Amino acid sequence: MPSLTVKAVAHPTMGIVLLGGLSDPVLRLPYHNSAGICYSLDDRESVSETTLTITGRQLKNTLNGEPISENDSRSPFKFIDIYRDEMQRKFKGNIYFNSENRNIISGSSDAGAAALGKCISWILPGIDQKELEMNMRKVSESAGRSYHGGLTVTEGTQKPFTRKILDESSFENYRILSVVFPHKRKPSDDIHFNQPRSDYYKKRIMNATKNVETLKELARKNEVKKIFELAMADTDDYHYLNDLVNVNIITDEMRALMERVREIRKRMWATYIVTGGNSVFLVTDANMVEKAKEIAMEHSREVHVLKVAGGARVVDTKEED
Ligand code: MEV
Image (cartoon, rainbow, N blue to C red):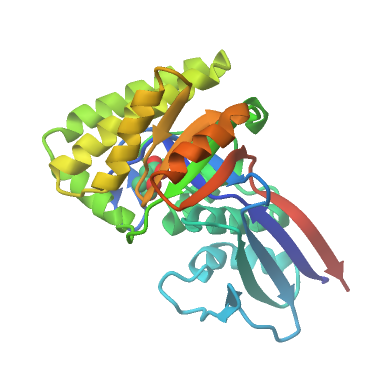
């Protein structure tokens, strides 16, 4: 049997119809449908680059150059082990994992899980894609977004499945500024395990479900501006709920920029998205990016220009006897 090296890359993601609330802390199952996009820095690829090697040689397992142990609780081996026997029926030796994040500003776990999922899927082309997504989401609940790329919806609560509804090429004429504020982000689990406690949560499930339906309609008609406007309304609803349960993601500084965006919308097209982190994402026409950047820099010194990116892909393979 031959030995093998397979390398895949995947991009980080952000929500468009934001995911809030998980019914199972291990399987990380959602209570409602959601939607998202993959993104990259505009001038350099932002990716998690993951290599799986199956070989008789002795190698090290690493994450960003640091050694990782197979027994670690968040170890990628929890995921690899599910497919270990099947992979070792095709290739001979131990399985090694090496992963590096390149130019990822924050939130690499979707990309990491998706790149690994892509490697496994290349080795085992017949595997059930729904099962694969269920296994990826145990590592990171929105990995499906990163796996498929472009604009995706994730539907279902017991066996959620993600599919692409609009190709990244439809977003070519748009840029997203990540305006980063210098405070530490809260863990997303604060959102996921507090939102369902609110009386408003039932309404949030209804709103998110409806927003996903509207989004699918807008994607069919390629109405990109309206997609981002819907994302802005969804951000407002999501953080209204977060504030009700005292998970305050939006600081005064972030709120000031969001208000500024609402104000400039009278003169120039722009929208915002805030997910779970310490950034306001400011969406603009590509030809207005310099103007938007000027405005953003009045609010923060750290601004990155992003664009919508594609799905996970295999970039290199090598088989040896
Ligand atoms: C994290 O699981 C979910 C958020 O990032 C929102 C989203 O992207 O849908 C907080």
